Length: 245
Image (cartoon, rainbow, N blue to C red):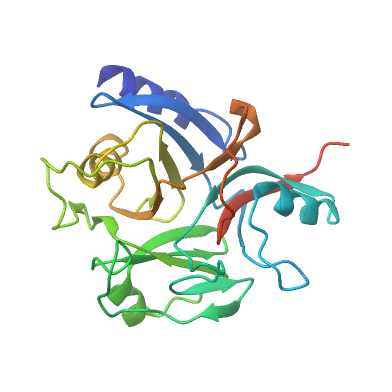
């Protein structure tokens, strides 16, 4: 635990403009965590290209960004999707709603209420429990819904079991109370929901965190030589920076 605290302290002293990603161990599990400062970094969601086709891969997003003279410095899959890669729940990209909020219970992890929504606004990022999101109705420039919530106002999801045997590679995001820090995490070995939620609550000290997906979880981080490849993705989240020339 002391090693983890020292690592987090070191991360906090790095320049605010740079995404910081590190491999850590917590409670015998291995994770990669990436910390983004929404006040100084350009964090976006990506789903469809200009022709309406899903990007599917990090490389396709980078190809599109090249036309802007930009590139991804970090990216991760960001929410559940149907076979055609359309988002299962609420999705907003550049202020345009693609899919409405789904607040009813349903099958699978997405329907394991409470689920939640990551909302990106100028200068901040916030994970909301879905009903709280509906009540507050924030004006999101980008938003993606997934589920279940991992941490809700400092508490683990009530359905998570310490002795669960359901283990997968998992990824998700947690945000600080003031919206100035978004921490993305992917497990590097199979973990339970309880273990993954505990990472955000106890090790990263984040009051709200949202599960993105399991098994197909992927990370793009050139500084760590990570460019995970596999099945085509639905929503992708990433930080955008000027491309090197």
